[in-house]
Image 1 (cartoon, rainbow, N blue to C red):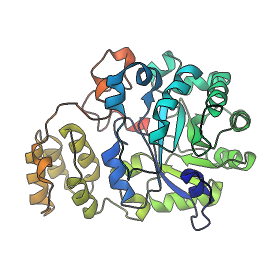
Image 2: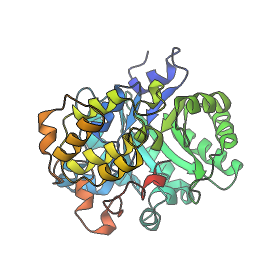
Image 3: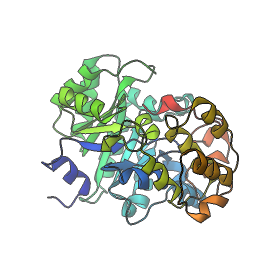
Image 4: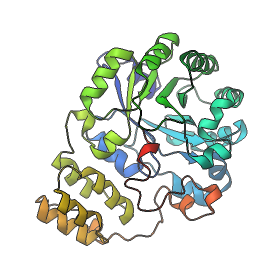
Length: 350
């Protein structure tokens, strides 16, 4: 055992692999992390937080990060395009998490244009400077990691991961597609090669839609972590072996304290996709109040116990992750997607 709970997960001989929830725009917030930790998810990431805004705005700090004493182990992911913002933001947040991660994979146009996310793959010196500078400030019981996408050939991808390893990262997460790819199958051969070419743990991200997917990919690639995004969003019981969202997870979701109707409902839309008929889904997805959502689930799924405060949720954005960026200029936003995002942002995850 080390004094680092994240590294302890990777070193645990009883674990075939570490089960991980990906950083998801708007979705991997505290309430969802609470739910999936009930269903054998070992490690959670926050949604990406813009480092410069987090440093410069108390409002951003209040809205973009929530946690509690049970929300561990936890990795906070930052979007940054320079080491100063990355280090300053990390220093502010590190007492409240177990590690920080640099986003080097976001393919959105705004991120590319501003030098964030996948654009950093074309500027590896910035990635290395971010890691080196933070390593000099980071307590030994905290991790520093990078999440990236593949480059256009295997050798380049391996070389980049080796360069990042040499800067002192604790682990590397690799999304198995390039920044230009969307629905193509992930490149497991490249992921296997990367895993065999570095000594730090490698986390595989992409196409994990069931526990059997995770097991199969781990056996082929050897990666020590398996990260799910859209799969666990649709099925919070994925890592516990459920093929679809268990009814107990819907019940648990209704008994977690929520602060905003829109995200409360959006998660249920994903979770209930295979629990409701097509006609029922169409009706459910168009509901516009918490009381109507809960009444519908009580009738359709025979849900009985619901936290009373969830029946009166409003649509205000206060106190919920993502709120700050959705209320300021689009150039500063994490995502400029419309609020009706069930289909529109899914490719950002895997």
